[in-house]
Length: 315
Image (cartoon, rainbow, N blue to C red; front, side, top):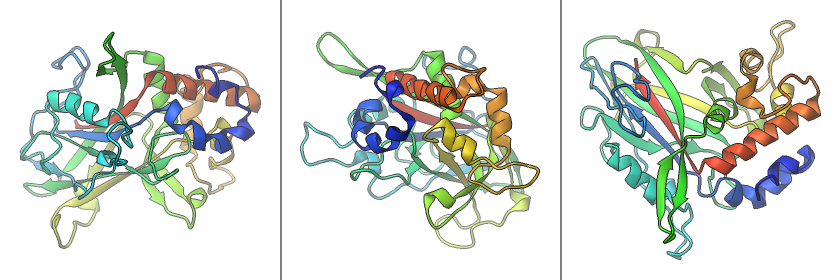
């Protein structure tokens, strides 16, 4: 299958996704890990061999998550030989070995929390990560002593399936730097979204283009009642654009102002980091050439990445 995706005509890409999802990113797990730390440690500084940081709990606030009663990526088909999301249990075991917790709800109880992203894109009853998918990431901030202003870091990590000579599965961090860079341009995160009647009518704002975003509790209202009373709900919105054309045609302009799906700063981000979006034709202005470069980057993600883990850290 290598090379097949990049050779698809752009017009055929969406129609064939229904059949290609299990092949391009087989069993993609949307698991998000939250960590609370005084700094976002570099891969070779105060971190283990996986590059995942060890958290240092803060005393000014806690982060909390709401776990679903029936996690999406734990669902089964009824046939043990054909899990709905192959490899997810192995990924969870890998993250558990890295001290990520899948049971506690607060960083006050476990400094590293892991839970599922919400994928709003459903195809054939599955919510696999793929070009064209989109969704949300929600967690809660509980101040422990008055208002707080927190700067969060956001990082996308890739994990991959590796089989030994006995066909036993291991989950390992992705080391291909190009594939990791393409995640930065293909899975976009925003701090705001105005929902439309259909997905195409969504309007995003607050592109997270430098790996950080801030939240000041003094500018928001706390949850008034229920489990998270007194906490502040923080929701991020993510989107994997299907093609370069989808980005070009749906990015707003500043003057004259045009309201489209993506904010105007996405064009600035694209121009400054074309290597995050395109695997080739970076200097071309031709739409077809850019679509080819974007499709090639999708293919490389699919070749090297089986699971995506979104890490949130507090700076």
